[in-house]
Image (spheres, rainbow, N blue to C red):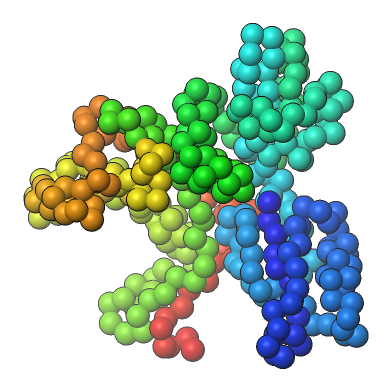
Length: 351
């Protein structure tokens, strides 16, 4: 779901943030979206619309103060692709299966197949079918994924994901909006040997401005990077993938560039410690003495966890898989937009 908070420059300049949230999925065309904006600010004779906040933008789209028709259509297309990519078929019971995820894009097709929507399934809101419909559902989902150029997802461990949802619900005191956000943002999860579920968040495409110094070797590098579209694409891929690459290298070699031994650890967020949840973007390779310091410090000792060899092996396999998936997303992004949404600059020379 991508939505924006629409105000006007007139109200903003007058010290008012009056406006409202508009969900782009509610509008079939850009003209429908503009009509909703005009209705929202009908107390102004000639309003100049201003987007003051965004939520749920798809990969690579900047949180701009306004969008034109072309970008509106691009966002809608990207949202449809993300929704189709998130569809899953769950083995719900002895007699039933369920299609869960972002089903809005194919809800009419699911209804025609005889599905019944149920917002209270234990695996999350979804469409319920008899198991005799399994092949038809696989064909429907695969057709939509192929049509949009999306790689089909592997089936997930439903039991582990249900446990993850219960823990998130406990950590978030049952607040449904936050629970759904965590479930959507999580790309993969694993159970660690200490009983904490480690969460691998879906990475976001960084297609903003990449900055360089305006003199010296860094400026020379900037000129090399921006020499042509191919060098720009290569830099874009390196910058987006380096977090995976650095961590995979560290977990494989277990030594830093100076030859010091490193220990794989992950940190459990304090806000969700009562739910036994850890975030994989907090997985780090640390020197032994620093790990001991964290284990002894009362501020961090309950949040830092050493990985067992079994944990490290599972996490490394997931990281490699997540990197491969992310690289496919990046290549799809480049195929769709090229370098049109990627910008480069120096701190002073280009200003």
